Image 1: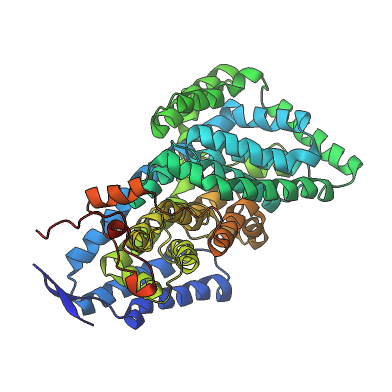
Image 2: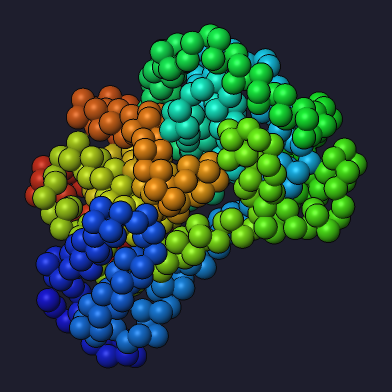
Length: 512
């Protein structure tokens, strides 16, 4: 290790690759012990232990605790808006169940939708809502929850419905200009957001079509016999009518949130407006008191209809139901912040970069680095920001547009987040959709391979990198912009790449 950083807290060393891997490997081992040996899906303590191990490594490198603490809280602070969304979504779930909005969505879905096309329709619906809202979490917690009830009525396993919901919600989020991650990726890599969205379409469209075909075929093969399916739907719709007033008017809270999103209003006020209107609907249509609305918003809704499928879905919501997820997210983010502050993540990514020199290798490793950061740090934002910062100079040195990088970070970051149970995205999906993994229903983790649109996109992206398809070189204007903005450009001449700035005959800037 070389001493190359003098600060007010003394000499700080960069970690070697072996030392950088220590907290990562040990944390994964403890996590595996908790999940697979103890058979307990609560990743909180293993991640907290990982944070402590990282702090010890940081201490060995010369970091003082206040510096590590600043790194921990910096990452947490950046992600607080998303935690705020979780709180509001918890309120929405409780209040929209009490108001009859979610029961009405389930009722009409069972009456109108064909069981055979349900999974494909669920994915498309979640995509449209997510593009409109700009938040995959908001989509999962509202429309996604209702779709889980419809799928239950059709006798479709929960993990299949969850896979379709996740596919649609996170893909819609990925191409929405209102999404925070869709804005973060181009900001980090220095490209225009609309160019970024357009460049994601070559992987987005095929992945969605593949998922659509699979969900279409699955819809026909998963159904129970016609008689038993009809009886199940009849039991659910009757129970909903017996316990709630069902009316098209009760769809107003959901329509209001979508309209506000289309008007480009901020997501948190838009979602909270849905809470307020839902509360009014609960009092006007369902006859509940204001105190009850407050209770549902905080502690969730509770009912016993006698129909287990309905009870398992409608006994949920409230701020408190999100606290398991929020606590997991905060610990995971703190772990990621400590890894970043101590330089462990940077060392690991740099080690990868020294081994790859072709565009296909760099593009594939950028996707892999974003996924690995998601896996280890549990933070979708860090999984976009860190590889985006680290890889951008390499793309510039190779003469490739950083649009390739922004797409790679979205594919390994945004889309893979909900597929990692201890990641912020995965933890929220498991909680909001009521998958009950923490209670031992591990079969519902099958939603991960069944979220086809999420994991096929990175595979398609790697295929493009290998074949050179949809892998744009930097334009002359883009290179001139790098020069004007004094962006870092890694010297790749030893690997056979020419200097893109000199190639345009641009004189290098004089040293300051």
